[in-house]
Image (cartoon, rainbow, N blue to C red; front, top):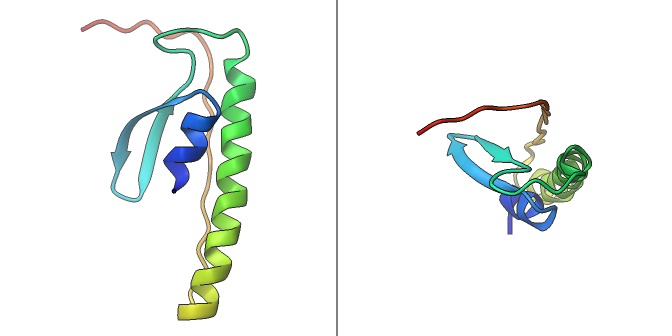
Length: 80
């Protein structure tokens, strides 16, 4: 279980992972009407998950981990 799980549990789709980051989509290919709220819920869940994971890493290795979450919303037009 990791950060991608938080996305899928909120109804999103992990589009790609970018090194130490990930890009997720909500509302594609099917819009739910509350996709902005789903994205915010996933972002908060990711922060909570990382807080718990970071506590373990800090205790075992002395390293504090943190993440940032950005949410961009609006109409998107995509073509193949």
